[in-house]
Length: 128
Image 1 (cartoon, one colour):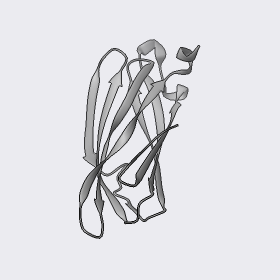
Image 2: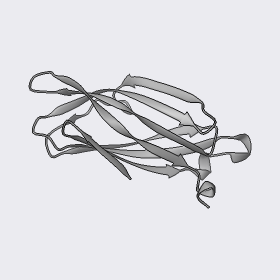
Image 3: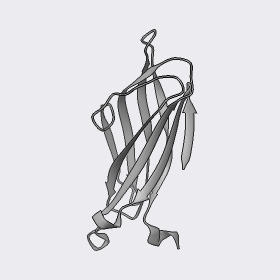
């Protein structure tokens, strides 16, 4: 698990390789990741949008931007956590992801970016 806190918002990431959806002989590798967004601050915040960078070990870099996460723009009160699971496909058995969430404080409308820490995506056969 990797973790990073920005302005009272703690992001934790756990990754999973999904062999049942991968086809290594066709260079298709599927990964899932679970994100926990914990509000450790004193103000309620809302996740507005996401901006991801996805990099294969062959150097291919993709960007993904959009509103919310998995169709939601969660409001997270102090001391509460929002979790979700999503996925990513790579053309190589190694890669990484990182990015930012745009958050908004509810009491004053201030928007700020929260860093999503870089995390590795690794097929188990590469760990030997």
